[in-house]
Amino acid sequence: MPRADFTFVHTLRVRWAEADMQGVVFNGHYLTYFDVGITEYFRALFDGDLARLRDTFERVYVVKATVEYHAPARFDDVLDVCVRIARFGRSSLRVLFEIHRGSEHLISGESVYVYADAGRSAPIPEPLRDRVRRFERTAPED
Image (cartoon, rainbow, N blue to C red; front, side):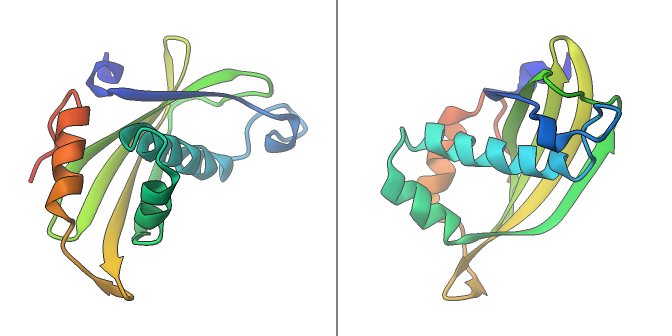
């Protein structure tokens, strides 16, 4: 099961406003679920330290996002948003996402984030890399 590679899982429930008239989640909301997932991932990584969380989110920018739809989520479903950092570049992070409803794999996705300082790409600090490596069950590629 692909989910076994993920150390971090955030659970959420589909709200009425996220579904269309047939009760199916509108496709754009999956990117929001990814965003919620990466926020909670970093919150867990930093043990809830709000200053470190803010500092990180002031420095990372999405440059690519993809979503693969396997099956739809529906209103009131309880979803597990799985998140892991799969690869480090010099200044980039490749983050993988999966969304599951119970044992059913609904969505796969990927986002690439660039780490920046003063608006320019910058090397990802070694302390951040080390913290992620210790946190992840499956070590990120370099």
